[in-house]
Each structure stands twice: as structure tokens, then as C-alpha cells.
Amino acid sequence: MMKKVSLLLVLFSIFAFSQKYTKSEISRITEGNIDSALPIFQTSDSLQHQVLLDQSIDANPKDQYTKILVNRMKLALLSTGSGVGIAAPQVGINRNIIWAKRFDKEGKPLEYFINPKILWRSEVLNFGPEGDLSIEVFRDYFYRSQVIQLEYFDLDGKKHTEIVEGFTAVILQHEIDHLFGILISDKIENQKMKTFEKVELYKELK
Image 1 (cartoon, rainbow, N blue to C red):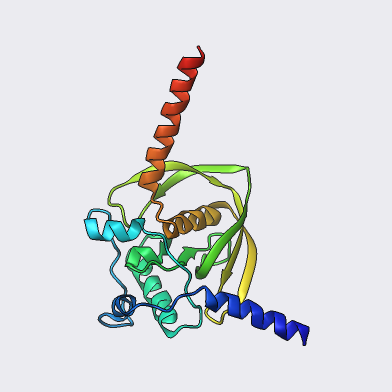
Image 2 (image 1 turned 90 degrees about the horizontal axis):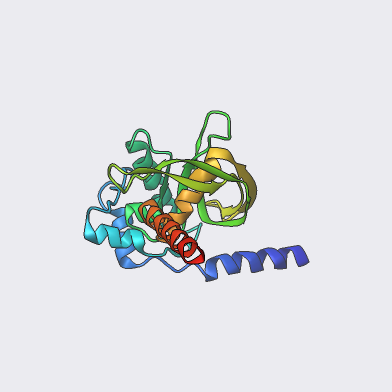
């Protein structure tokens, strides 16, 4: 009995904080052929760029529109040919949903993650190149945690927690940044600013 009550409370907490899709979101999710890829937003377009900078909110895993969105996001990622991850804001929907290629699994499958949260990050960092499907001709090197603990839900509303390492962990961190409106072009500017601040501080100390 207690287990059932606990499960109901968990499900209630999931759906209580997952706002229903707005009319404009539903319109975008269902526009055209729902079995086709949604267009990928670009920073070169000012209106699309603003969507990419906005913070996303949780989605109801069992909502019919979540299923459509998840599928169309996968098709959008596949349409790129070489993309390894995508976030819902990149198709114009500010919801906490991402796809990532699992380089840590046999066959390197694509997997989706609804309402993902990083519970823990390792202090050991990976330094490597990153690009972005929403930023044309941009690539640079960034530090990311080598290992993360990830929590997320599937379309059945089931909660999962796992440890992810290596390049897959990098991809997941990149895509989750998107959910907070953080782009790698912003990160490089922040890194430059921090470096400048450190240099100025060093000069003052001397």
C-alpha cells in the first residue's frame, strides 16, 4: 500500500510541474507532416536565436504531444547526417527534452531523455571540440566533466538514473546546456572574460 502511495506521489510531482503545451507549441509540434523532421532553429535568425536563449520547462512524458515532439526531434537530428545530439529548443520548443548518440553503448544508438537532470559531475574534466547544429560554422574546444550522474524519464513516465562517461557525457552536458538557454558561443565568451579577469587580477597583484 505504501509503495503504491509513494508511486502516486512521484507521478503527481512529475505532472504537477509539467505545464500543458500551449496552443503555439502544439501548432509548431504538429505543423506539416507529423512524421517528418522539424526544422532546426539557427542563431543567425534573431527570432529563432531568442528561442534558443530562453530557459525550457519540464514536459509531461505521457502527453500525446510529447511523443510527437520526441519523434520529430529524432528525425531532425537524423536529417543532419552527422549530428550527435539535439535539444527541444533547437526545434523551437522550450521543453526539457533531448536526444543524444550513445557512444558508450554497442551500436551507438540514439536515445531520448525527458526532463533530464545532472545530479552529479566529476571534477575530472574532458577537453575537446564541440560544434552546434544551431550555430553555422562554429567549433571550439571546451571543458566538460568526464563522468556525470543523470536522471530522466521515458515516454511511459518511468524514472531512470544512470552514470554516463566519456564523449556521451559530453554530448549530454552540451544538450542540457541548451535547456538553460546556454550556447557554446556564449561559453567561449565567458571563458575569454574569465581569462581576462584573471590576467587583470594578476597584474594588480604584481
